[in-house]
Length: 415
Image (tube, rainbow, N blue to C red; front, side):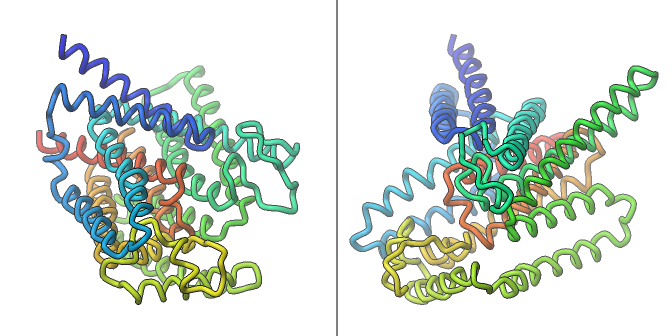
């Protein structure tokens, strides 16, 4: 009886995560509901069956994540009168993500579920692309009813602003592209005959139309940080797929690519110091003043907008427009360091695994998810996506799927 309940709970967590992925761009209420259900069902399941193999397989990852939250907690000592707000930010906003991450890693150890999750992401992203097109050409957005301003203004789709839409597309386009590459590759290898060839043509054309539509939607956001992140993600995808062809020169090319994009971020920030974007640099300077005030433990998690007025000549609250600066300002240099070690270690393991496994469906999904994750992190130099309700869930779910696929492929290689 107990095992049957655990099995039902496992299925409930799985489908709640599918619905979480689907509703990320569509409904904040439904997103919060299904993410909460997935977490609650998962915790009940762990109480009934306390098994922790997924934690044992990711010890170093867990250490980095725990230390990130430890230093976030230590930042509370500098919260002062904003302690209540910091406690809420830490325990209500931030701590929901590692619980969901753990649920995704453990629930999606069966890679067939990862494939289903990628297909749900594909379907949801297609709806986003369609609604951006209807918004642009017909003046209505059918997912959340956002009012369109026509061709003279950037597209926002079902999101609150164009930067959020760009971040979502930056993350999902590489996944859609990798799925398209797999379906074209897989049908070419295993299917012959007239019907199979037509089926392959229809699938290729469908993916081509979806990808063109999504890239067009990204272009219409007029979000330069999003474009840079998308280019970085697609470049990563191309390099990994062609690894065996350019094996001898792969690492020099990869390092050259990396060394190009790091200064490109700085050049992009410098070049766009125009009338529309100049306020970001003012915010960066004031954020740096906050950082110098408490460099080790920060000013208190969740307090950036409240502290901002003490360092700026304005009473208008602002985010830092840079995830890493905001983490540094709120919770200090050690918190940022362990966050970078956490995501950097996942990217390292993913690249290492991708270069070792064969060109299977798992391979294409893994590099697509990793490319989307990398593009999201690069775009985060220009926005605070980790502080966004929708994009925060997107980031941690994608992170969990990447780790789940890495664990599966590492365990298969040991057998």
